[in-house]
Image 1 (tube, chains in turn green, red):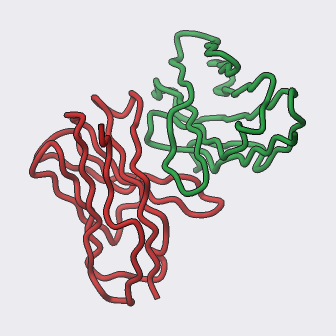
Image 2: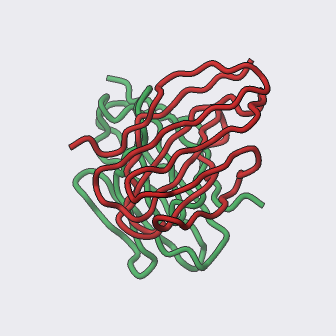
Length: 107
Length: 113
């Protein structure tokens, strides 16, 4: 059973728009939910992370919304920029990851 | 600061050959891990270590061996390479346990022919 499910696979957004990526997890024992950003040819780098004792975390244009009862969390990128074009992975305790979302922001 | 360093960056192996992917970190992190990244599959955990002398299996450990003799180094060994092991491999380290920020290396792109 897939421990972390991520959608959509790909996303195209106009510059200035909002990008939303969703993830769902299975195991309620997970206590760390990160989002990693990866540019082509590079390793993933932590963008933002949340723990299950809070429902939202915001860092600049990036926000995680967390719904513990539904076992779901999402990444919102406000005012999306072409430089945000990358692949995004959600994770659970760095043990399991989603399959990734390729975000393209059109100028 | 070098962070997490992986070598080599690229490697081509013949089926049945063995090799070691090197990983070193200079952040004095206790926790280190290896992942493989395949198209449409995301990152999958191969093996991890919570400290020198301690290793454990992740989600996809078959065909891979690891050891951790020092805090800094965590090599990944392929004993008999198979085409199914063609992938991009990432090493990562964290200050402690799996529920803190992971710092990834640049990756090793391995092709098994």
